[in-house]
Image 1 (cartoon, one colour):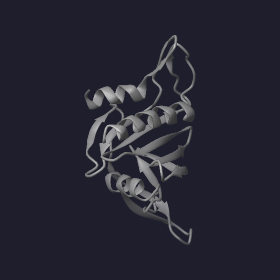
Image 2 (cartoon, helix red, strand yellow):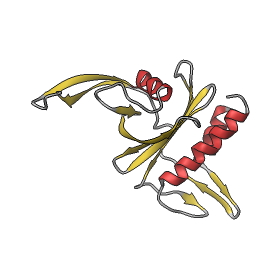
Image 3 (tube, helix red, strand yellow):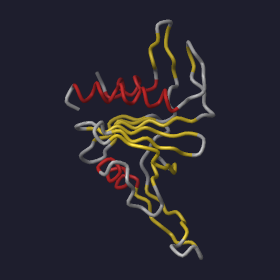
Length: 165
């Protein structure tokens, strides 16, 4: 099976009377060792850019360079903690850590109108985001949700871990 096939498993959930498509907004399977992207949806990328953040005293703004590759690597290796004054930023979106399960390698994130789930496997990282303004298609159309996104990521992560990835 190719990495794109695994990516398609994130996007589509099989149910007894068919399937639910468009389960996630953006998704990627990424190498844990060097953060190279093995497979991703068209909308996903890891970028470098500058943002303005408030100064420590709150009196002004300061420029901060965001390197999403370094940031993602730090996040997955430190149970979701962020080492950037710009916060957690993935695929040009700002997230906040909601919770994590270090023993399972899972990190749950929130953003305005949505969120994401990250799973750290032995050799790769699975990332998927959801957006409440987007709907699934297929057997049971509904808004994308954290439960559906998390379920898809956790299921694929369990499988890849059993396969040594």
